Length: 152
Image 1 (cartoon, one colour):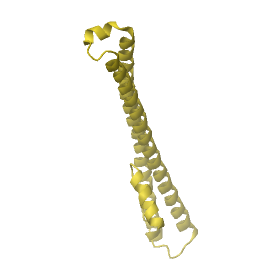
Image 2: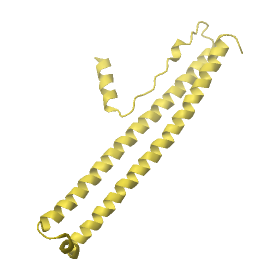
Image 3: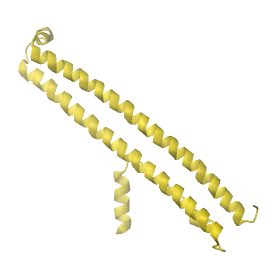
Image 4: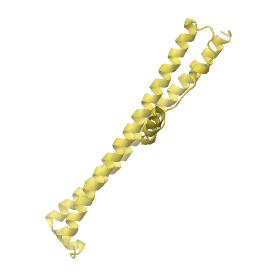
């Protein structure tokens, strides 16, 4: 049952956590050096998964913000249409309420674009951190295997 809940949580996520098999490093001695490397690998893996969660949350926030902005845009457009469904656009431009609503629609569309750019920048920075951590993880794994094999 717990596995089913875990799968449901993964389906909600927009990104999947990275799993690394760090326990498959053949650790027969279980000495302090092996423990240190195992702890370091676990720490790096945990950081990567936290960054993936942050990316997931940022993408969810972006989706909510864009949805709310779109709702506001549609409300403004509906008010314009209800105000004068048969009036030409040029007459609507004269009406101060319609003119203000058109300005608001323009502002909201601009805000949508700004949110897309900001979210992209936020995710990009987090992905860069993940790449750095994956490199660190790879190096630590190699060092651990070298020490384990006595090639230090």
